[in-house]
Length: 254
Image 1 (cartoon, rainbow, N blue to C red):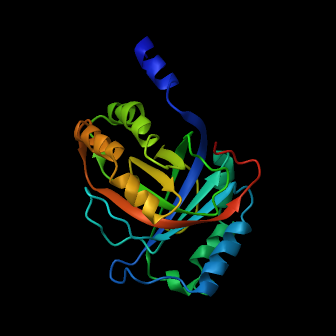
Image 2: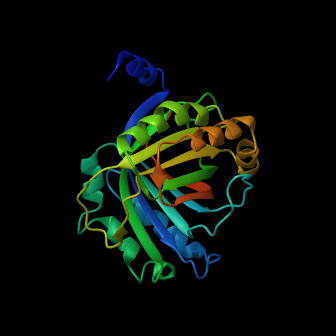
């Protein structure tokens, strides 16, 4: 790496790296469907019974206004599960692990027949000026780059060096995270996806997210997006209402 590249990367507001497992459940034919209160409670209890889980978030659809992106139906639920090390993830995804109960028709009948996917990724968690140590509820904008880059390393380097600094400048942003692919051992029953990257920005509520999406910083981000190295495939943008189910005392986000 050239010295200029090292200096640029060192100036990034990067804080720590952990492992994240994404579980997504979609019903394209019935996007308005939601889990019952009893099923939501059961989902939460399964997550709380999972050893080694440092943080667990549940994302459900929220409505915001993005001037650049046409709103599409969102997954009915996305679970985002954080582990300090890959060994913790692999133990949680083992054949007899508590997470297997998420696929039980008896425990969660509302998820039976949903299009379910999973992906484990490396999470880069960045410091932001307005970070909150604990956010039990929030509004999240989750983005998935589902296709492929002509030169993955070049594409990712541009994203980390140029796009992330803009993301951390969004007004009233509370969290910024970027996720990249990795290989892992696991036996959860859902289809694995291989998105090249995901990212998220988090705000206090839908109004704050909408304001950020219509801010001058967002316009700068869109201009940067136009200069990305070649990428082919779908990019999905979804706004979610987010609640925290698990957050260990040792999990640092600021």
